[in-house]
Amino acid sequence: MSNFKEQVWTKAEYKLRAEERTRCRSLCWQYNRIDPADMNARNKMIKQIIPKMGAGNKINQPFMCDYGTNIVMGDDNFFNNNVTILDVAEVKIGNNCQFAPNVIMASVYHPVNPEERKAGKYLAKKIVIEDNVWVCANAVIGAGVTIGSNSVVAAGAVVTKDVPAGVLVAGCPAVVKKKLK
Image (cartoon, rainbow, N blue to C red):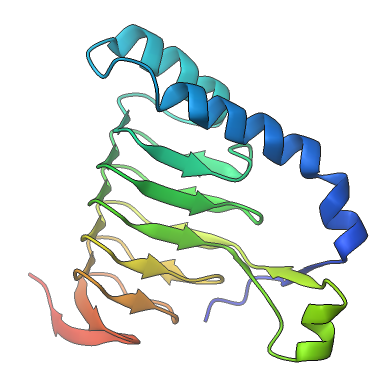
């Protein structure tokens, strides 16, 4: 996995950010209820949810994220229905990426140790999706992962390790199936 620094939160620290999460969830709820034909209202609302977003992005409803402020997005990306981004750590998306229905990007995770989970410890690592990546339906991108430019993540893949540029990955866990031209 990428050498991203692991963020560790206690239950108390996580609770301190509850207001931010509630604000974002409320904005997502409002966004998901806007008439899909009202592009002006949708564009205005999504900019409130994801303020660090470039131009020409199209995000279909429903869409959900934890904070929005931890998402950094380039230009001309497409999100199909029901994309979820758990952006406890930064989720950085390049330019010209496509995300099919039901894609999940989860920068947050919990300890394997049951006592640490019981104590309310939360962990998070940055996710990076480089330029011109296509993530197919029902794929899951885990914490700390970088997906290289021009790569494709097959439908249903669970990505737990970095993906090099210009490859197709598939499976659970995802592995490189072939290099792309």
